[in-house]
Length: 145
Image (cartoon, rainbow, N blue to C red; front, top):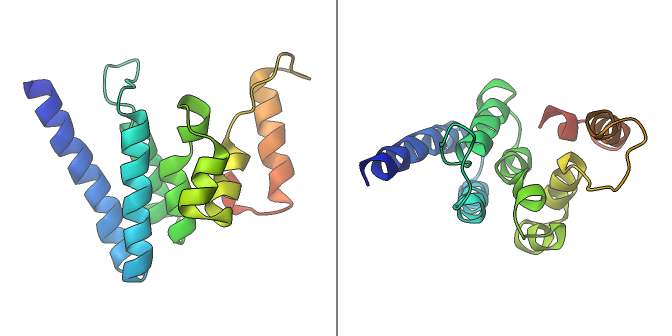
């Protein structure tokens, strides 16, 4: 019980940093959408743990923190950073993301989602890099996530 409580406060504090950072440069509507993306990702990843035993949501929060604080990206990119593993690691689909968060966020999430294949041209990792690099011709934001 104590472990869960300490993780809850860590999650709240780290996500709060992203919200605080973004509140300085986005509208209240965009900030609300960012919070919704975090809450959806947290709910979707709730049963998952990292190899360390930590809640999985700490990874998407870390990615969103980099995108928000260091790269100073806009709201949709921060939302996609929170959501970037939802389609890959949970039962939710890219259509679920599109319905909740719109075409742009869905596009960014789709680009960074590793596609499941029976066979890979090179290797899983090389194919994933190829997928991301091919997407750069459409939108460099995906590479930054």
